[in-house]
Image (cartoon, rainbow, N blue to C red; front, side):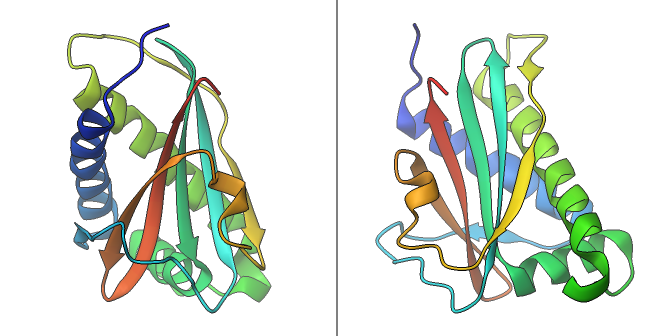
Length: 157
């Protein structure tokens, strides 16, 4: 099975996350050092998208609840609350994961003309316990309006 160099993934991920966040939410996501520990003091939304072809991988998006609410509000042009909109939030984040996965593969493999993506899975994690959910993935940290979030990549999923 072919593997992709992590530096190539990092470059493609940066292009993809910038493209998706700027086009959908009119915000700028900036990469930050991955030596910064991710310790949000609130629950996080963890969204992951399986990639089946051209070869198995998983793309993930990890963001604090407050950021997810703000991002969805910017995208949908209305206020979101966890009490009333949790499932719609998951739909918005799942769509973001779809767009991120497609954009990432387009940047990573520009000569490929089709990909097979699975259905995204999104859930709220109250305690990230050191990131056990994505501990086997390569993590790419970003900052959006002063708040840290993560994208993840793992092959062979």
